[in-house]
Image 1 (cartoon, one colour):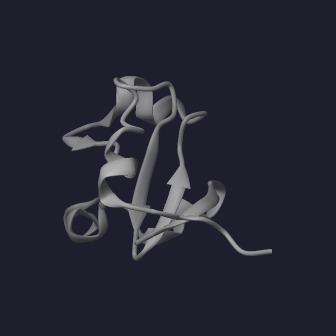
Image 2: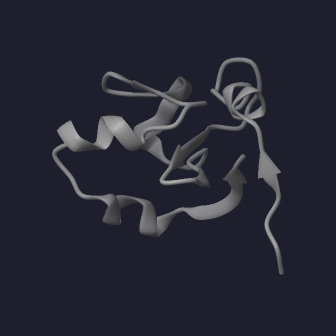
Image 3: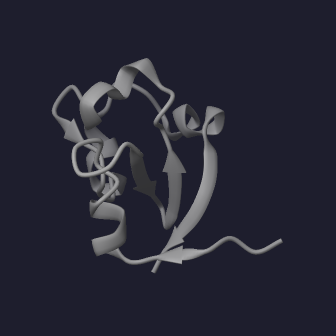
Length: 77
């Protein structure tokens, strides 16, 4: 099964403000973090949903393994 590709503009709409969905991208994959209590209102500490977090993870106190608990719902095109 292939997963859909979304543009940066489509990802930006899933920021927890414009729509109910809360999505983030990391290394080309888009994750649905809507159910996470850590992403209420589309923000997690100084990070905002609806964008590619790849460059920001360098400074995070956790590793990329944090994404393992979320579903990949698309690719960033």
